[in-house]
Image (cartoon, rainbow, N blue to C red; front, top):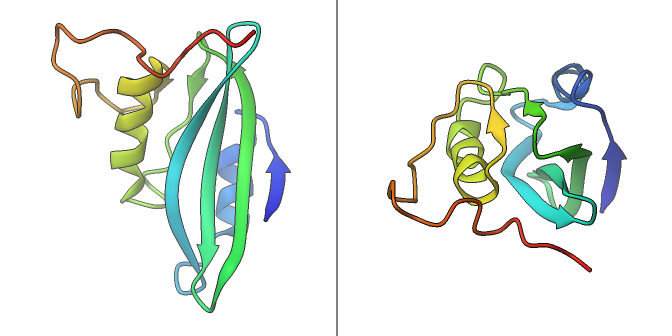
Length: 115
């Protein structure tokens, strides 16, 4: 696995530069709760011709930061983006709450405090 650190300011450019639709499969947008009220957002790709070749773009952010959408680059990313909104309470541009959770559900169920 190759991990590439990006910022929220340059993640769209980095993914546009990297992503070739016939070569790479966008697996998911993932979140990992970190210390200090932060979360690591991961954009995960696998190569079609090499199942063990995985590239992860990641950014460590505060929960209050807004994650840019990549739906115009990879339309199927909308599902993963909405899941991150529901499960981590992170705002992603153009991605609404309510894909998996009801209105009265616990807020940010996967944003646990790490000690």
